[in-house]
Amino acid sequence: MSGNGNAAATALARIQTDSVVATLKASYPGLQFEIRDKILDTALSKIGEKSLFTKELEHALEKNEVDLVVHSLKDLPTVLPPGFTIGAICKRENPHDAVVFHPKFVGKTLETLPEKSVVGTSSLRRAAQLQRKFPHLEFRSIRGNLNTRLRKLDEQQEFSAIILATAGLQRMGWHNRVGQILHPEECMYAVGQGALGVEVRAKDQDILDLVGVLHDPETLLRCIAERAFLRHLEGGCSVPVAVHTAMKDGQLYLTGGVWSLDGSDSIQETMQATIHVPAQHEDGPEDDPQLVGITARNIPRGPQLAAQNLGISLANLLLSKGAKNILDVARQLNDAH
Image 1 (cartoon, rainbow, N blue to C red):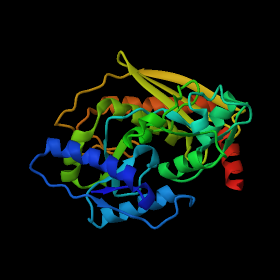
Image 2 (image 1 turned 120 degrees about the vertical axis):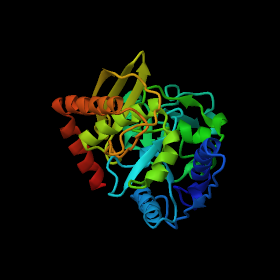
Image 3 (image 1 turned 30 degrees about the vertical axis):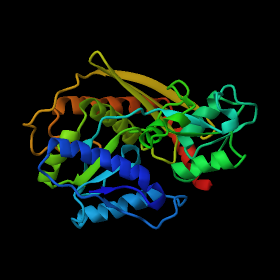
Image 4 (image 1 turned 60 degrees about the horizontal axis):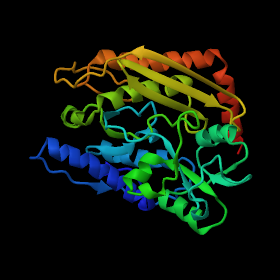
C-alpha cells in the first residue's frame, strides 16, 4: 500500500493512508498491512507534479510492489490509464474550501478584508469564482504544500489570507486555522474534493473485493456524477470548473459551473435525478466496466448509471449554453502563461 505525496507532503498523505488502513484492519482483523511511502524528489511547484506522482505510484502498482494507492480523489483524472481503476471511494469529509487568515486579520471574513488585500490560491477555480464575488480583493498565486503555504502566510506580509481545502486542514488537525468556510454560493468546490480514492489494478479481483468495503455509497454516487460532468465537459485543472452535490429525500442534486479566468463570464446550472442511496450487496456482476474510472461491484449498478447520466446531462446543458467557448478561452489563456 502506498500514499501519494513527496517528502514535504508526506504527512498528509500518510494521515490519509493510515485512515484507510485503519478501516481495512477493522474489517479484516486477520490481515497484515504494510505502508510504503513513495518519496519523490520533485519540486512541488513543478507543473504537472500531481500527474508525475500518480505515474510513479501506478508504476509501483503495475510492478506489484504495492497493491493499492491512496489518493485525494480530486487529483485523479476521470480517465485512468489502462490496467488501473479506483476500487474504492471513502466517506467524504467536508468538501468546501476554507479561508486561513494572516494573524493580524483573524476574525475577519473575505467580505470584511480591507480593499486591495491579497489572497493566495493556486487554484484557477477558486480565483475565478472569488474574484467575481469579492471584487475588492486581489487574488495571487501561492505554491507549495500545506506547511509551505501556511508559513508564507504567517511569516511574510504578502498575503492577508489564503484559500485551502477544509478537508486537508482537518485531516492535519489544524481546525483552529479555519477562519471561514466558503459556502457554495461563494465558491463551489473541485470535483471529488474531500474524498479519498483507492487506486488498484483493474484485473486484481482479490484486491477489488478487499477494498470494496471502503465504498461509501452516497459519496460514490455524488462523485460519479461530478466526475461524469467534468469528463463530458473535457475540463481539468487548467480551467475553472466547479461543482456542488447533495443527496436529499431520494434526490441527487448536482450544480455545476464554468468560469472565465477572471470570473467575469460564467455559466451555472442545477439538475436533479431520483436516486436512492443503496446498501452494499455482495452479489454484484463480475464484469461491470468502470464508470469514470471507478469500479464498485458491491454497489447496485442502476444508481451508479443514474448518477453518471445526471453528470452527462448537466454537462450537455452547460455546453448548449456556451460553456465550450468559455473553457476554450480559459485554456488558451492559461496555456499562454
